[in-house]
Amino acid sequence: MKEGKSSSTAWGVTLARVAHVRFDDSPPIFDDSLAFDLVETEIQPMLEHYGPKPAPDDREKCDPAMDQLEKIRRARAYLPLRQLYQEERLAAAYERGIRQYVLLGAGLDAYAFRQPPGRTDLSIFEVDFPATQAEKLARIKQLGWRAPANLHFTPCDFENGSLAEALCRVGFDHHRPCYVAWMGVTVYLDGETVRSTLADVLSLAATGTSIAFEYALPIEDLSGTELLCREFSLAQKNREREPFRSHFRLAEIRQLALDVGWKRLEALDHEATAERILSGRQDGLSIQMGFRLAEAFV
Ligand SMILES: C[S@@+](CC[C@H](N)C(=O)[O-])C[C@H]1O[C@@H](n2cnc3c(N)ncnc32)[C@H](O)[C@@H]1O
Image 1 (tube, protein in one colour):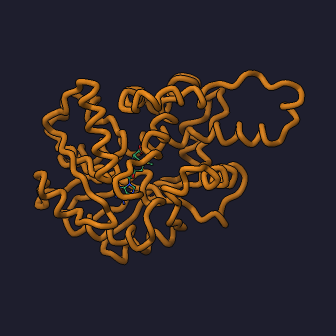
Image 2 (cartoon, helix red, strand yellow):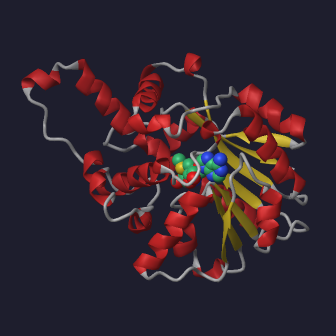
């Protein structure tokens, strides 16, 4: 991230989740359509790029590049899955009695605006890079939306600021446990910042706290659609501003979490999840994007 510049990946992943609702088979894996409003008006027309393509002509049918693009497009099911996982783990934490929800790198997350009516006893802390958060706040104002009373905006740059201080400034209670979601962020941080953020969260975590997060697999471990997706992402022109910086194997991220003091890590079984959420669908979606999901517990 660059000083003063907001994240373009935040609206990129939001548009992919909305496209899934608009253009793929029903029911969606996760319905994040409300988040579309949070995307800037000038950016919204880009949703069409995610839409159905005209039927290929005979030449295109034999073009391997077209076939590859279609595989990459279909892998977008990973993004609603990530949101589903984030909010399933939130529901489990709420069941355990957790009443503080911290979103690290919240982007255009819309949970606060579609939260179930019975859950307003949950304090929501949206932590994000200051420029990204300022843009979201401006958009909320432009839409005339009112931020719910249980939502607390927390600007913080993980690479240059103290997360604990930022949270405490907006009323986070470190004597009470929390559930932290850290989705779509670690890949943009270097390994040391991933470690220090895991340690920072732990430093403010009362017993019962957990952190659900995503990590990117190393490119050497990818093949098939996962490799295509990674090569496509690396070639995107905004990558220069938000480069991919950290990659982990499961054993490495588990060791890192344990080293900084987390007690255990539960990885989501990627293949079993694909089976669970995709079987029976006719739209040929996949979740093979080269990322994995896990939750660490204190
Ligand atoms: C791909 S978006 C993910 C947004 C959201 N979690 C989602 O899944 O829709 C990445 C987010 O990480 C944030 N981010 C990246 N580097 C950061 C840093 N050094 N400090 C704080 N936030 C950062 C960006 O501002 C952006 O909101």
